[in-house]
Amino acid sequence: MSDRIEPALPPALWPRARQWKSRIAAMITLEGGNDSELGVPDLRVDGSNQRERDAVHYAAAIALLNDDLPDTDDRKITREWLSDLERAVSALGSFASADSDLDRVARLNELIARLEHQAAAIASLLPPDRDGDG
Image (cartoon, rainbow, N blue to C red):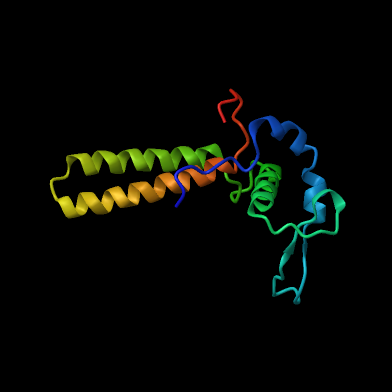
C-alpha cells in the first residue's frame, strides 16, 4: 500500500471536469460478450480513439461518474461513507488503546491501517467539499 493516495482529480480541475462528465459517460463502452457478460472498458478521452489504460484516467473517470450519480442512489460514494469509516477507525483505535492483549492490539492496528487506506481511497474519488478542504 502506498502511504498517500492522490485525489483522482486535483481540486482545481473539478469545476471544469464536471463539464466533461456526460461526454465521458458517453465515451465509455463495453466491448465483448453479450448482455450477461461485460467486456473490457474502453475509455476514450476527448473523443480520441486511443485507449487509455492508465489508472489515473480510470480513477478520474470513476470520480466523475460517481459525482454524476443522483444523490438518492445508494451506490454513490459520499462524504457520509467517508465519515462512517473514519468514525469506525476512531472507535477501533479507542478499543486498541484500552486493550492489554498485545496480539489483539496488533491485529486491531493492522485493521486500522487497512481501513485508513480505504478511507484515503474513498476520499480520492470525492470532489472537494464545499469549504474547499478537499
